[in-house]
Image (cartoon, rainbow, N blue to C red; front, side, top):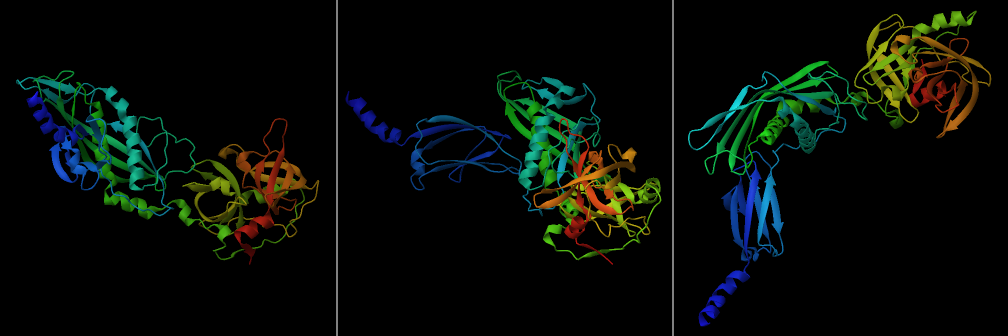
Length: 496
């Protein structure tokens, strides 16, 4: 009895200090564990620590570190009730964090493809402790995990500060297929080609690579990152690198190691100065836009066209249609009207909103790239500019007022860009207020593609810019145009 009392007296202070037993695993393997900044062991490992270590600071700080990855930390500020626990730490590859301008062009990820690796091709080996080796071969089903890798690549890009837009494409080659409609269009599309894979599996315990036994896995991928610029319409950067990942597992598989190797390759790509410089210097198309709401730009002068009279509606259409154009963007199409022989074109803001590419197609088939000079999103008007001179053009009416029953036409591109210079005829059926702006209501068959086209009087003068129609059951042929005087005021346009 006396011995038990003595033993208890000896062990009580020891036990009261609370020995903690923590088992640490990490991805990647062989990371260093620190406790209160003191190196403890290399993962996977068991750390035994007494709570008395926390007396000075009132806490225990666990850190897991390895080169090329962000440090993982966890802090205990109270003595835990559970003295035996396990941590599985997943480290993220370290990426440089950038502070980009808000107008920097967004990017999206296209897809991952495997190039030059055939089905059942040898890509590595399994080794056991007693000179046994078995080939590892490539199978297409390993690509099923690429969606996880793409999600992680997006997260990594977000962490680095790159502006991203998620997109979904269904194609077998890089940069083919249409991106679904997005709130903001990406200028850059990133694609990844995996050109080689090497996997080495080594039994670390018990001599055999079987389920339940510890297996060391090293996976390395050789990759080529490609950046496609939609504005330049070409691949503007190719970057070759490698990604590797070291881990231990307890199953005869290595597919998740492939994903982590891709993530390591992605981190190196995002840290590449050439890619950073490309994105930082290229800014979105919107960096050329000037918001008319800011009134920060100078008044733009346009030439006034002499008033003309036509003997018939047919004659008027024939003489004015050359100034009515189709606006084509990477988002869709709309209509527009040339208002100055230097190539100034009026259209709707929503026609070119978030577009990276804007082309203007003329009635003779000529297509020119356009710059966006100024816009007013609240009034839904925009002014474009194409290079050239002596373009056919139309001018606003001297008296842009309209009366009920007044006959009007519009020339535009209703449902397809192949239907440019289509004519719709109707009458003014009212004037309506909406959010402090007055609109011309017309009884006319217009389609979404007519947006941005001119509303003309019998003399071929511009009364307004067609903007919208009512879409509802039982409602047909009701459209709206913003008066040309409002459009010119909002865009700060005046006559020479």
